[in-house]
Length: 188
Ligand SMILES: C[S@@+](CC[C@H](N)C(=O)[O-])C[C@H]1O[C@@H](n2cnc3c(N)ncnc32)[C@H](O)[C@@H]1O
Image (tube, rainbow, N blue to C red; front, side, top):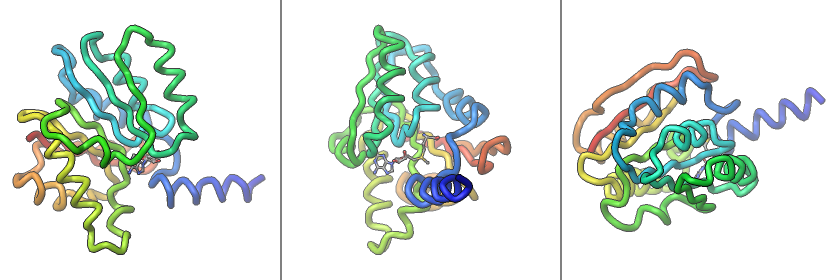
């Protein structure tokens, strides 16, 4: 039993880049940066079991839209349950790599990403995938739109700033999370 638990933790860290789902403190810090007072086109990337999805769906207006992107279909039941609980909200689930949703300009007002960017720097492609991703976020954001991203250890801050061509608008630190996290806010 202890061995199974240990294996699961190792798999979570290496594949998903986290130990357990994000805490309510992290969710509220990140989602709290979104101005829900107007209709929004929102893209959430890397939903996992949906700690952010739940709060975004709860707060978004009925004339807003949310695309939830998650590469692993094993998390679908959690997201589908949230969608069923809010039938009047416009939510779509996309299973696949997010790069497929970043192919046109100015599609979203808000991008909320839980992607473990640090893991992508370990890929043997001189960070080509990482940069393609961040360039895709900028490309697909509306002017004035906001890209929200959490990371541990302040990783990849410089990569995001290099692609957006400016300093981060805000960085929040959330200690009450496993692991403590930094929330990046970058407007286009
Ligand atoms: C760190 S977990 C975050 C889970 C949840 N949002 C949370 O904060 O607890 C990252 C998630 O991103 C997903 N993911 C990884 N690469 C992806 C990609 N290229 N496109 C879409 N989702 C991806 C993983 O399957 C995983 O569920």
